[in-house]
Length: 88
Image 1 (cartoon, one colour):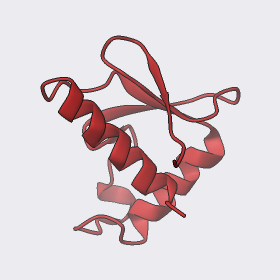
Image 2 (tube, helix red, strand yellow):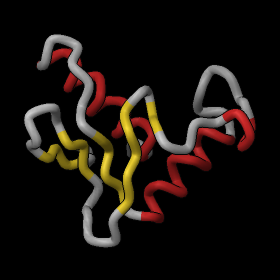
Image 3 (cartoon, helix red, strand yellow):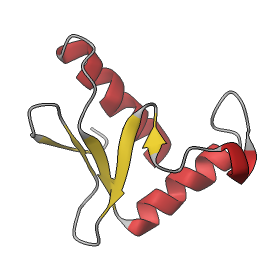
Image 4 (tube, one colour):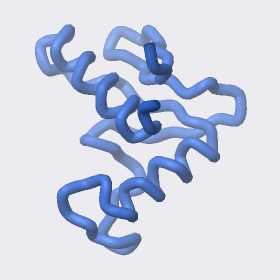
C-alpha cells in the first residue's frame, strides 16, 4: 500500500505531466495527513534529511500545503479541480 508521501508525489507528477509542468494550487490535507507527511520527510523519505529546522513545512515539492479537518486529502489542480489522494 502506498504511503501518503508516495500518493502526494504521484499526484504532483501526474499533474505536471498533464498540465505542461504547471504547479498545482496546493495539497489540502487533514492535520493527521500533514503530520504523516512531515514524519515521512523527517525520517528520510527525501534525499536530504534536513531535520525540522531545515525542512519546508509550508511546501511539498514546491506545492503549498494547507490543512482542513473536513478534507479527505486532495491535490487542488491548477484549474481548481480536486484530485483525491487515494490509491487505485
